[in-house]
Image (cartoon, helix red, strand yellow):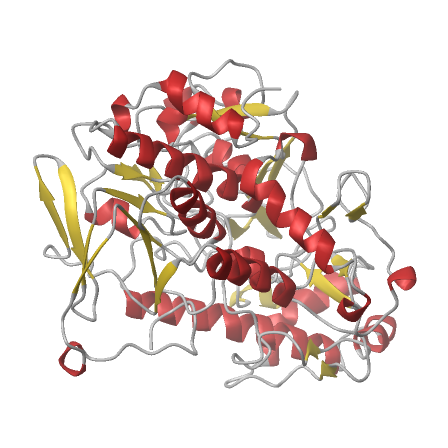
Length: 543
């Protein structure tokens, strides 16, 4: 089995008859951006195929991230806004409130009420409800979707002619031919296989004249650091005893320098506290309580922010995210993920799953957990009615960052802070420049600390340049990349939000159709025409 969806399998090529499938636009990926892109292509009258390695569509939007990171909602337009409007309609139905009454739901959102009656939007939702919206998009638009189809990433996987992709092959042996291609994966596999240049890791601040890129030791902009001294050693205070698990022995590096490290991944966990809809946290294979000793020591300092990111979503469930110095983020265990083989990615995903399942089991069962936390944890479990084909565990790891294209225009810190006017905008973002920790290390004073957690708010919502979703023309003339966009590490910390991916997916699809109609490269699509269509389709391009 391959990573991402452990319910999926890949049939050996010998068992399938090799076929060639053709469409005007071929979209690789099963993310929220992939679906909005396909809907837009179809609305504009062209044929489209979604080639999805994933069984479930929607990526993180249907994979547990229900407490949407939105920033300023006014800049979310087009199909992205329609997605949240459809969720509003879903939660207007009494039948959608299975485990609690609508009146009992707290309606807490990020900046606005979750259920926003004025704008008829719902920003906070259950995973299965989001997945149903994506499936409704597919059904209503009669989209062609081939699932469990994995790009052949070998040298023979992508065929190019005169600087343009003509086709790509999947591991099943199927060939997909198109006029324009869209890479809507979190990893950027099609982009990389097509020979487009990209970057992995944190650039030095000097590369783009930034402040918050690169190593950031001693910079604490959220609460995800050790606020009191905690010993990193197996025997407290004794370096000779060796380091506890989940701590790196490497030096963190000088502030502002670049490295290969990326912000931590985790599963966004949907939990339930309804007695009839919860399953106790299972004891995972190979469970070892000693790997969570660091958390016990954090609790021993008096830290009690355990439940601060158990954000409520409807029906007595949560979107539970990382919070604090030792939490669901599996820090430092994903550095090789972006470039890794499918089998290695599968191992990394499984490792993250076992770490998080062990963490939950530890907090619910271990005698070292303080009595108040232990008691509160007893009310939580995995929801019986979510991710039913995956053991009630999310089917998508939160790939917060992987490859980032080096395209026609690079979105930088100054752009994502709203301090510039970018050329040819095709969407907007507004969320804070939000990077999670990249490493956990031992300070010179012999105590443990985290590094890399940044949260800087933009002056105002900002525009995203068309050049950031297209490669340089001499690298590929007919590819658009709305997820692994061309940006620095720290700018990507804001751009990487699910509503933005849906926005950019729609804009990429619009450009793809205009390139076909105009018989031109994606780089030479007339921006005046692109802008006209985007505005007609209710995209928000400038404030």
